[in-house]
Length: 123
View 1 (cartoon, helix red, strand yellow):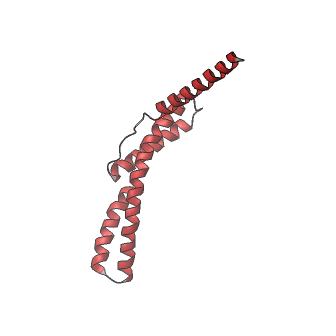
View 2 (cartoon, helix red, strand yellow):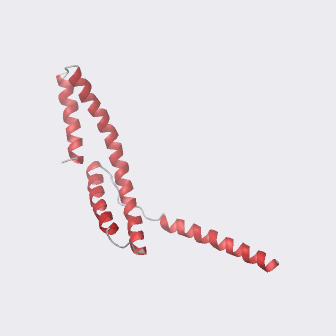
View 3 (spheres, one colour):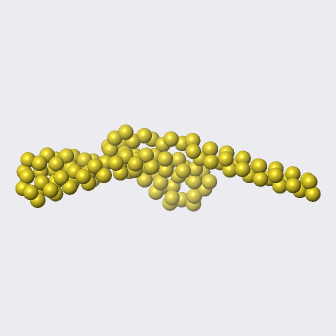
């Protein structure tokens, strides 16, 4: 009975250790940084293309690891893009209000800022 208990404890310990090692190895990728919107959009586009290419195959274990690595760069890019999109929505609201109130000067300023950022995202 003692040997069964020791075996069970050893099995559980090995499973916990293996799980911790798997989590640790999965967390070591940093991905490419996205310091600005231009870089974020470029990385997002490129890494989406890479993801699509890998997804079109049979998905080997190496492919899964490749996809795992790609997601770090995609997450960094999306985080930066989301920050800019939130700011862009606020700028668009300024355009909206300025046009509604016939404030030409504010409209030109906000409109210019809106277009400058939006054209980075959509060309």
